[in-house]
Image (tube, rainbow, N blue to C red; front, side, top):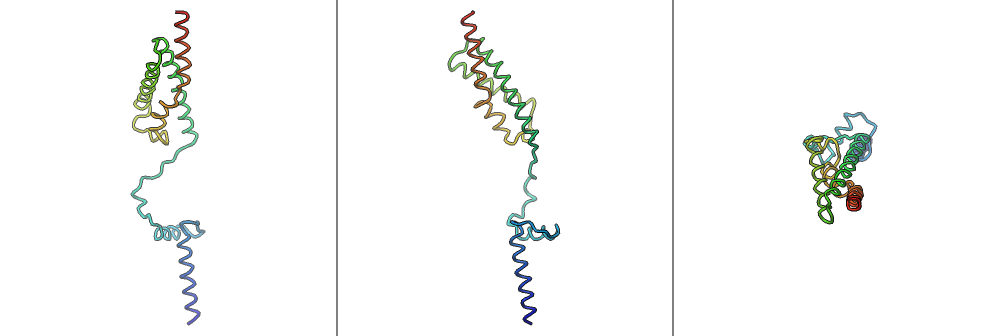
Length: 156
C-alpha cells in the first residue's frame, strides 16, 4: 500500500510541477499535452477575443521611414523657398512651416496611406503627424527660408 501511495503522490507532485512551470519553461512534450496544460493554468483564456498580433518586416518599416523622411526633406526645401520668396519673417515664417507640414501629413495620409496606416507604420499617428511637425525637416526649412529670403533682399 505504501508503494501505491508514494507513486500516486509522486505523479501528483510531477503533475503539479509540470503544470506550474509550463507557462514559464517550454516543455519537450507533444503539442497537445503542452497546449492542454497551458490552457488549464493560463489566467488569460480569452485569447480568441483579442486581435491577432501584427507582424512587421524591419526592412519594410525602415524603407517606409526613409521614404517619409525624404518626402519631409523635399517638402521642407520647397516650403522654405516659398517662404523666402514670399518674404515671410519671424513667427509668420514658422507658422507657414507648421501649416505646410500639416498639409504634407494630410496629403500623405489621404493619398498614400489611407485608412491602412497601421499596415505601414508601428505608430502611424506619431510617425506621420507628430514627428512631422516636431522634427521633420525644420532645419532644412530654416536653411532654405533664410537663404532665399536673404538672396531676394540683397539682390532684389
